[in-house]
Length: 556
Image (cartoon, rainbow, N blue to C red):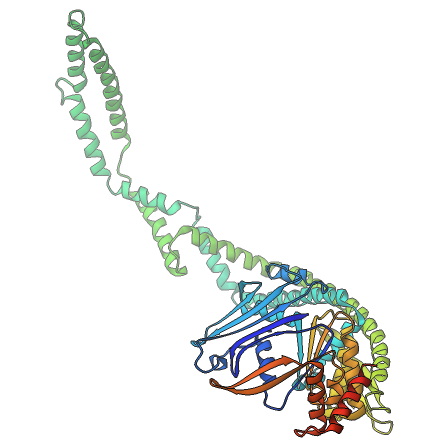
C-alpha cells in the first residue's frame, strides 16, 4: 500500500508531504482545488511522460516520491525480472524533472529506465479515472477480466508460447516459399555462377601463394644472377676459395696453439665457419641449377590469378575466402531448389503441428472462459442490482474467431438495464452513470483475484447520488477489506462518509502565490466538510446534524 507521498514544486504544489492510511480513504475538495494535480503527480510514478511545464513557476526541478509497503503482495519476481533491489517494507519510487526537460526515474534509490517504472508502477497503484470507463469498449479489457476470474494465467502463458511458435513457423514457411520462388527465377544464372567458382578450384591462401609464385617466376633472371654471383664469390672465381682461406688461417692458429693460450678455440671456431660456408656454397649451387625460366608455368599462374581477380570484381569482394563463402551460399541455395519440395513439406508439417497445438490449448481456454463467464454474469447481477439497476441483464458473449495472440475467443459484455430492451454491448446502451456502476462492479469483482496494493478511484461516482452512492461507497469499502488500500476522490457526501480516513485538498493564497495542499481531517473537520458537501458554502446547524448522522450510519 501507499504509505507516504511527497511532492515538491509540481504545478501549484509548493511542497506536500502526506502520510496515507490503510483501508478505505476518501479525498474531497472543491472543483479546481488540486485533486487532479495530485493524481497527475502520482501518474508520473506510473511512467507517464514528463514535461518541464509541470514544474512550479520559478523552480529548477520538481520531485515526486512515494513510499510503499508491499510485503503482502508477492512482487519479488517482478523486481528480480527488472534487476531491482526488493524491499518489502519500504519500496520507494521517485521521479525528478528539471527545468531543461530532463527526467530521471528511481526505484529504491537506484536509477532505472522509464520503461521499468512503467512496468513496476501499475503493479503498485491502479488509478481509475472517468476516462478509464472507456475500457469497457475494448475487447482486450473484457477478455482480460474473464481471464482474471478464470484464474487461467498458466493456460494463457502456455497458449502464447504455442502461438509465438506458430507465428515463427508460419514466417519461416513464408520466407522459404519466397526464397524458393526467387531462386527458381534465377536458377540458371546461379548455376552458371557456381560453375565459374567451382572451376576456379578455390582454396584458402591460394591467391597469396599464386602471387608469390608469379613474382618469383617473373624474376628468374635476377634470382639466377644473384645465386651465380654469390657462388663465384664463395668459390673464389677459380682461384683460392673463401673456405680455403679460412682453412689456412685455422692451420696458422693451430701452429701457435702450444705457445699462445686461447688461439685453439679461435681455430676451432674458424673450422666451424668453414663447414657452414661449404654447406652454403653447395646449397647455392643446387638452387642455381634448379632455377629455370618456365614461361608456360608463369602463363598458367598469371591466368589463375586473372581468373581470381575477375571473380572478385564480379562479386564485389577482395579475398578468395569471400569467394568461397559465396560459392557455399550458392550451393546451399541450389540444394534448396533441388530439395525444395522436401523442405517445403517438412516446414508445412511443422506449421500444421504448431497450429494443432494452438487449437488444442485455445479450446481449453474457451472452456475455462465459458465457465468463468457464467460465474461473472451471476456476480455482476448481484452487484448491480443494489446499485440501482434492479432489472439488469448482463451476459458475456464468447464467439469464435481466428487464432490470435489471445486465443480463439471474441468476448463482448452485453448489457440491458431493463427486461424490455435487447441486450447489446455495454458501451452502446449504458448511460454514463450505468457505465460507472458496471466498471466499479467489475473492479470490485476482480479485486479479490488480483493482488493490487492500492486502487484510486477518481470520481467514479459521476452521475449517481443518494442510495446508489451509498451502495457504491459500501462496495469500495468492501474492496479495502482484503489487504488493499482503496482511495476514492469524490464529490458525494454518501461516499465521503464511508471512508475510514478523510483527506481534503484545498487552495490557499501565500506570498508565493496560489498553492494547493492536502491534509488529513480530524473528526470535527470531517463533520464540517461533509456538512458543506450537503448544504453548500453556508454550513447550517441542520447540515452539521445531517453530516453527523450520515457518518454514524455509514459506520454501522
